[in-house]
Image 1 (cartoon, rainbow, N blue to C red):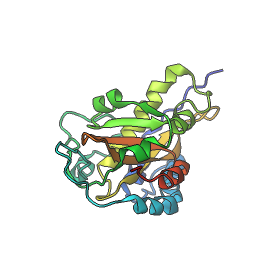
Image 2: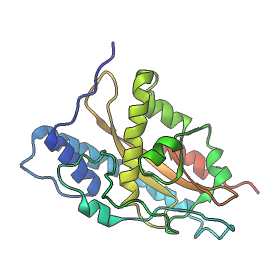
Image 3: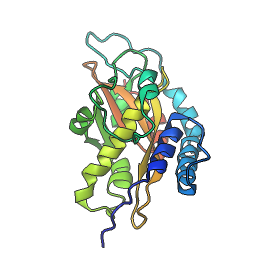
Image 4: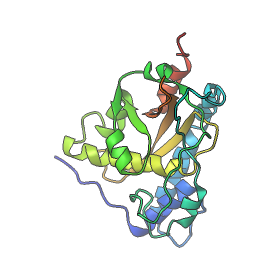
Length: 233
């Protein structure tokens, strides 16, 4: 039997956006909104030790490889301009600032990231949602968050990928500079529970030999494989 995910209420949406943006909780919101807020904040903090390890991956600024090597620009003005009645996973509107490519992020060696495992490309949907990079997910991340171990019907896969990519886009707007790996919290329902729950992904920046920057979405537990597979000479 397929269950339909419950839509977040108005104040739950406000609480989710406040949690992702690091703003304080409004005591006027409901108890359910408080649960959403606390869940997201806990998810953001839960992998702090894992993300500290990610700093070991930063090899310094990416050298010029003779081509454009786009990276993420932290556009705080976009976060500041968001209206309180907007869901954090709403697609960008035409009057919002777009994500600019600059040289603020460090890219990992391409082979090092691809060595982790199978790479499922979701670039087309990412571009449609305003993420100007080649984007993929590892097989474990796909099976855990998109198919939920085959418990989510195929007809719902695209919607879940969309929610993950919108979470990525929101995170990119406030991502710290000079990091090769950033955290990406996403709200997703997992059957039989229809209430969205926060789950944490990591986004790893890596660069191909032709200086194209990729983003791979992976699970926090996959980071150890990334650390143990340095670039092959």
